[in-house]
Image 1 (cartoon, one colour):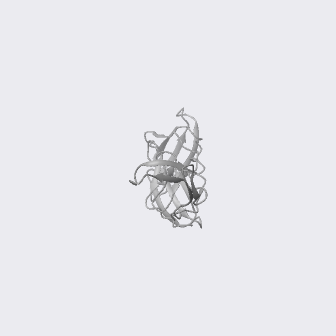
Image 2: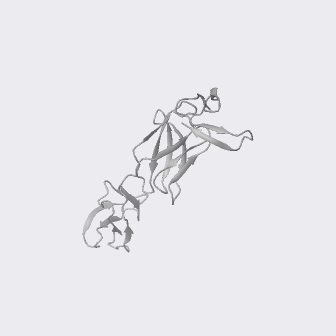
Image 3: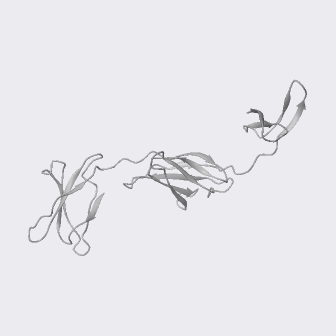
Length: 195
C-alpha cells in the first residue's frame, strides 16, 4: 500500500522517479482527503512523487515518495529465554512483538536497538514451560515471518552431586547438557567448568 492524505475530493497522481511517467491516479476521499494505492505501484527501493489536483484544475507542488521498503525483515533471533530475560536480535529499529503459543495473544512489544538490533523483554513474559513466537515489524510496516520460541526453561537445575572425589578425579552427575562450574572454598574463584 501507498497511502496518505490530500485536499478532500482532489485527484492524486503518482509519478515515477522521472516526474513524467504517471503510475496511477486516485480520488482523495471527499470528506477526509484520505487516499490509497493498493498494491503500491512503486517497487522496493523505488522513489516517485505525488501531486493533488483540485476540481478547478489547480495542481499542488510535488511531494516526494520513497524509497519504498517492500521487503519484510528477517525473523528475530532469540538468544536467552529464562525467567529473568528474553533477549535477542532483529532488524535494527524494528518493533518486536511477542505472541503467546496461540499466535494471537500479544504478551508484549520491544524496540530493537537502532544500531545493533538487540532487544530484551525483562522479566520474560513467558512462564516456565511456555512457548511463543516473535515477529519483527519494520518502520514501513513489513512483518517478518514468525520465529518460534520456547519452551522457556525458567527452572534452576538440581545441584550437582559429586560421586568420586580423590586426587585423580572429581566426578558426578548433573542436569544433562548443563555446565558444571567448580568454585574454590571462597565461593568466587572458578577452578574449572565442564559440559
